[in-house]
Length: 274
Ligand SMILES: [Zn+2]
Image 1 (cartoon, helix red, strand yellow):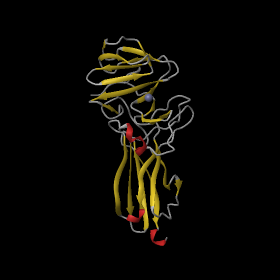
Image 2 (cartoon, helix red, strand yellow):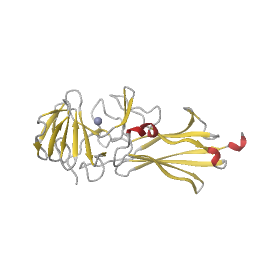
Image 3 (cartoon, protein in one colour):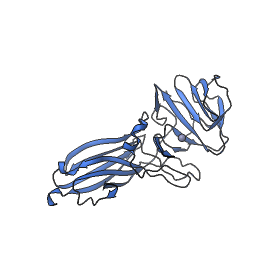
Image 4 (tube, helix red, strand yellow):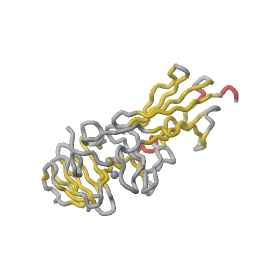
């Protein structure tokens, strides 16, 4: 069952400046973003997307618990704890300095991606994510992909662009793709089948897995400062398990609506010549 936007107009798509599972890195803490950041000016009225009972958590965080739970962060409540609210009831206003409501959906003990099909509606995504770069490295140092030997790490830098840009200073900043996968081929022969390394399309990934999905050097967005999303494709990948020769490493990054961006890196394995 789908639900509307938490700000007016309910039936029109709004700018989302933070996607589900975007990296959040602050004070040494690293986490997957557990909701979406709906951009709107400070003071904007926020409404319940579904009916339920109000739960207050701190001065600016609240949830409405019904069949599912929806939480609304950086919102000054206009309702009382325990109060029952109808769908589209006013529940609060965006707190000063935040410029967005962090909106999350929880059901069955898990956080869910609100942008998946049949959830937050309407939401269209235009344009495919971008695979910016594919890198072979060892110990953090880039390697020449045309002369690979021994054990290496494979990474991809990828991003998506929100379908509607938020206003400055959050305009033009990237968001994470919803899906990243790779495969290795030698000519027409598939050597490593499509392998998914990040899948943010449904439920939140365990926070303990953060550093197995996002590689060092990953940054989150800050005002006027774009984030960088570095995905591990393979760690400690032993090139000696494959014959020397030419291979093509293909990477796909997809958004929540299935638009796919592609990139590739040609590898030459040369273990026999060292
Ligand atoms: Zn947020």
